Length: 238
Image (cartoon, rainbow, N blue to C red; front, side):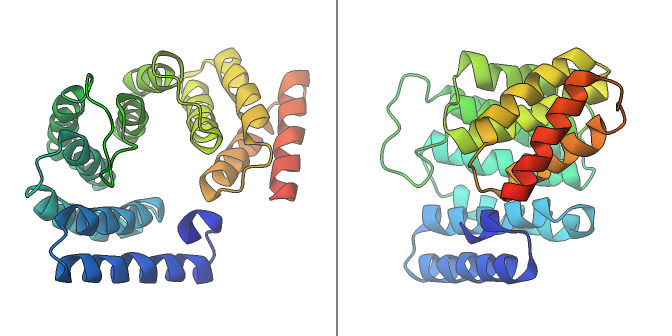
């Protein structure tokens, strides 16, 4: 919660403290899944801090997988493998990233007919996997496959938690824009601003800023102007 509350130094330092403390306690208690979950949080934090933190991200992801290797739950293993794939993609390792992503897919597909259970990774579904997969593919430059995965996450798997759905829609708009699909980007961003209203999240705020800057390049387009104004309202409210 601290990590996604704000990207300022105070919140990010606090988040890092919580994650590291949880990892140490879990390791001491011999709880590999909880240890992996805490380390995954640190990994995601490093990934979100960008290219300068890529070495830290991949090192943390590998530590996470050391714990994940002790687990039998395919949902949990897929959860941590997908993060390993994203860290490898950030590091420019286009051999490890697709290999980890494929392994993650194999594991999550084993859960198609099983209930979530009570694990720390119980929320990780095929829909969430599609979202994570889309983001990793985008990081590797495969925008077509990334957009397909995000579309599946929204439509086929019906991700409906507002914060998650808003984040997916924001990224989908960005990817369509980068593909040159201006109308498709506007459509995704229109849904994004509807979904994001009232949501407090660093990821959602980043998506709104990205959208506002990109649409600012089209001052003569009425729809773009309206969406940019709505993005500005989201940022002001945040």
